[in-house]
Amino acid sequence: METVQNNFYKRLIDVQRGCPNAAIIQELGIIPVEYKIHIKKLMEYHRIITMTEERLTKKSVVKAEQLGSINLLDDAYAILKKHNITYNNNQIKNMTVNQWRRLVQKKVNDTVNKEIMEESSLKTKLRNISGANAELKNYLKDLTWENSRTVFEVRTNMLKLNSNYGQKDEQCYICGKQETTRHIFECEGSTVKGLTLERYKQMIGKEGRKTDDMNSVSQSAEIVRKKME
Image (cartoon, rainbow, N blue to C red; front, side):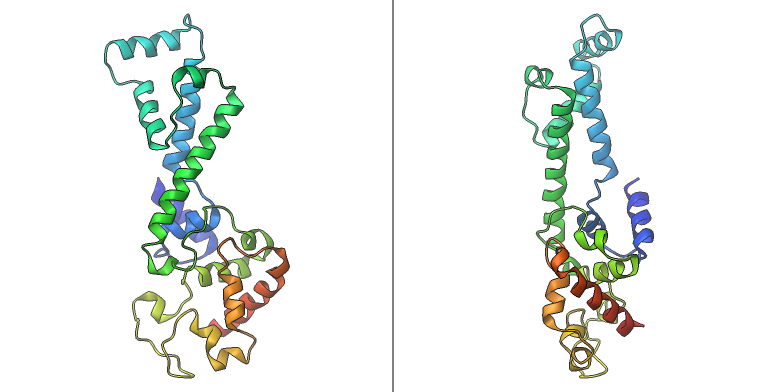
């Protein structure tokens, strides 16, 4: 299911399937399917433990627990531990549905951010966005689809450069230096067309630059795309 989810978003952005899954989660703020299921199970757990003892569902779960059979509560306890939710049953019972939902969603988001930060710190392609939270970045909300895709490719080192796909010694045809995503902003041949190191830094801002810089980011994306054609 995770593979299907990630491949769907890669096709939506139109990036290669080799794009790290962590990049999709981090830039789009996608919660993995497994953790969405965790949220559903914990909401059901809250529904059951707040039921009156006469309810058949409650009786069934309690009986299964008494018999030592694997049941929904066992699953819920494992999920609670996974997401560092340390409240006991009585404390959870006293929460409203909305309070419990907000708490669960926050804890699951914390888990996603922790795991994504750890994973992205180990991947060369994601060195620019390492440390950023998993959330929908501003450029994806404010720019056109084509410009958003280009910014995504710059931030995740997914531009169609040979050096981004295994050929680390690929040289720039203009200056002879190593061809990298950053280099196309520094090369003299790029600078005269409006690409500068400052524009590169704007595009890889950890939280996705806000509206004040968005026009500049959009212009940079258009120049990069034309250069790559």
